[in-house]
Image (cartoon, rainbow, N blue to C red; front, side, top):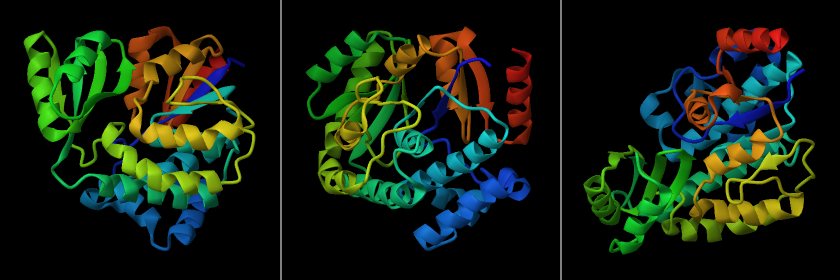
Amino acid sequence: MPRLAFVFPGQGAQHPGMGKEFAENYAEAALVYDQADEIVGYKLSTLCFEGPAEQLNRTEFAQPALLVSSLAILEVVKKHVLSPVIMAGLSLGEYTALVASGAMNLQEALPLVQHRALFMQAAVPDGKGAMAAVLGLEADQVNEICQKTNGIVDIANYNCPGQLVISGEKEAVNEAGTALKKIGGRVIPLAVSVPSHSQLMQDAACKLQPELHSIDWQEPSIPVVSNVNAQANPRQDFAGLLVKQLYSPVLWEQSIRYMLNQVDYFVEIGPGSTLSGLIKKIDRSRLLGHIEDIPSLNKVIAEVKSL
């Protein structure tokens, strides 16, 4: 059996219909949605399966919906005896990985993620924050421009070689974007309402801190790589790292490179294939695939069996 890493998507991967096929065909997946509906007090399952997309895309719904859908899919993956030796998740996906590892349970994680989403949404008034993808430049070039720009703008994501994300005050992000284009970068504004992983999330982090420290963290059965320091950590560090995660850059490329020494292949578990695309740009030879529906599940199982 090859050594597998499981990775879980973050906000932006959500779409109506996610997880529905699994819930209709596997009792294990349906149970996760039933438990989630009971915990949140509304039909989160219906929102995942049917939308509407406009509501599902709102931060307060997108984050719990992604957590639950990825965990429901994971239950089916486990039924087929696929298991990882290490895990990671992009931003919100790190919470999914921590539940998957047994560091906390769904009953703890779901309210936590609901509050995280609300605190993030409330931290910056609508229209005051922005994020943009930056393609084709080195991190040093982007960082230098951000430091020279008036206002708050930071590197929010180190996704893969030649792909970064900047985040902060709308005017500062726009000003930095103009400067980055002048030195040869491509800048693509992102359709988000929250400037994640920027200094503007400090207030959200302060509000979430006591909730994170109140969790009865367990030592994970499978190591989970943190977005903040791109390494696996003991349980006593989880709360502090997740506080920092809100206003620190996501070290995704660095996290994947850390895992490269320990695994043969990566499998993305959950809606979409964004992480698979990033991993392919980091190391094309190590990507096994993504699992978001039954055909993709069967494909990955067949490929694992052939190895």
